[in-house]
Image 1 (cartoon, rainbow, N blue to C red):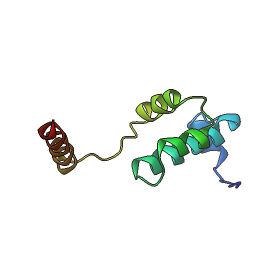
Image 2 (cartoon, rainbow, N blue to C red; image 1 turned 180 degrees about the vertical axis):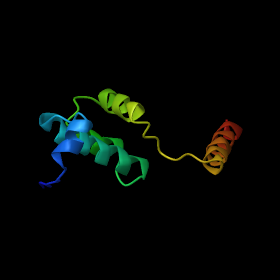
Image 3 (cartoon, helix red, strand yellow; image 1 turned 45 degrees about the vertical axis):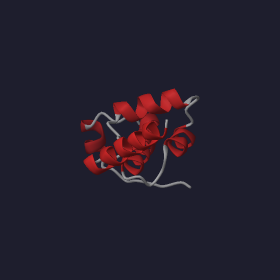
Length: 89
């Protein structure tokens, strides 16, 4: 899919956007935002951005501060699951 975005030249110049990098940066922002919202996983981010490894993907997500939401309830559920496993041993 191709998407065109119009941006006034004076704003692009002010933002110091280089035409060769704009498409890539927009794609990165879309990937990071959708990952944050839980719409796509790390594997889809990797494919979208053509990273060579999952580690490269994780580094990108870290740089973008794109973390999946992890609540206190999630932590409690995980802790309970661990307690259940340990109790069975």
